[in-house]
Figure: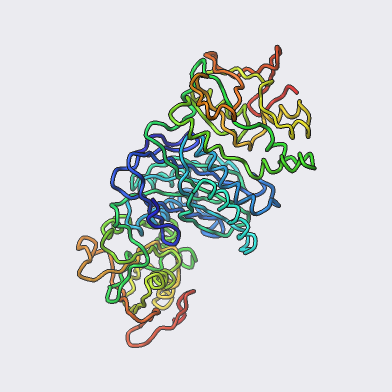
Length: 289
Length: 289
């Protein structure tokens, strides 16, 4: 598939016949998207992982990527470690780095653009959710935001910090949902914000039961239930998938790794319940607890 | 070809059958690659033009692009003007913006990744130059570097400044050369530096006659012949194409817009002559004048 990679003015690829190409692009700025002192390996891993996550949210198979890296100085050690992390994440899914551009600036800025592929007509979008769909999420929510806040230490703190630094791209789950899920998004801005994008694009509403939100033991132990729910609803950076489809169409092989958290309604807007009580919130986060 | 563009986690494209995909990526950092006070329209135009130039150097047809834009603040007027320039350059070649990511940072950083296509096996590389090839360049050299230095004003100064701010991507020339030229590169780092990349990749040498270098009247008028030649050899940012092929194979339709400046030799290294005298230089520029 890669005819010519790194080393010329551009890369040449031969797309397989009868497949569609998915392209995504995501930037991380030091100090804005991650702490400036974050380990270089984690910076490299994470910029690939967040793009893998976008590819996953489209239901595609990741294939190749290009890198635009703006560096403050050419620190060879830092760059070696960054590359280690970058290739570690790319190699997990067989993604080939085919080109790039390295520049000098006042601040570290890393952009990865990634290409993936899928069968024609099977891409997952935000706009297909329908009344009666069940809403699912992968993994657990809130870990990354708690990890970024560094409010706990010990084993739980380490687990949460790693959840921020090394998000798990749900590529396999996305592949299983291609052509099946009615709508999908990856949770980068927080569940409320990202689910709201599905609702708006689809012209529907949703009811979410916060008692069903998947929370890790580590998060509960570190911050308690109330704060854990706040992180799960409003915190970003989880890079879990949120998707909707009729319950009966959920592929059995992914059932163990996803959690049903609510359902799509005809009434516009997002309503959250905690048992019998209504939970107020706004798009910027979760206010009840 | 574009199944789904801006507005989801990724874009979906349907590549045409029996074509190869070319992908390029190029970043511009304010203060590093262009003056911080450069007109926003020019910033937008230029980040597209430099990527079009890479596509041209590969011999491909530009098709689509994604944008990663890091902004210091969300100045709506600036962004409108930037977009005007971006679309102006993209529309010239029918390139569609299919996705992007806008982030906040301490410094303006613009990255465009562009996709193009060509017939299988016709891509232009740096590594195919052969002894006896004639070396050609498009347009004129040195204008952009002189324009950036802002050493002259009046009509010539305006012309040169525009040559920096709005480089002409040689897409049509690149297309005409696809499958024909033995080697090609776009002149972004300067003729000596970029031609040297062809020589190194191809394992050959070259003789260049500096009396044949194409110089604009405006450049000669603004800085005189000696400095003009220095800009032409060592200055960057021209985004002209430099390519090699046997003289007899030059497509007649591009002959009027290119200049033969020398030939490829078996002896490794780049030799420059000015009439009968040898011109010393190094990879960082041109030292004789």
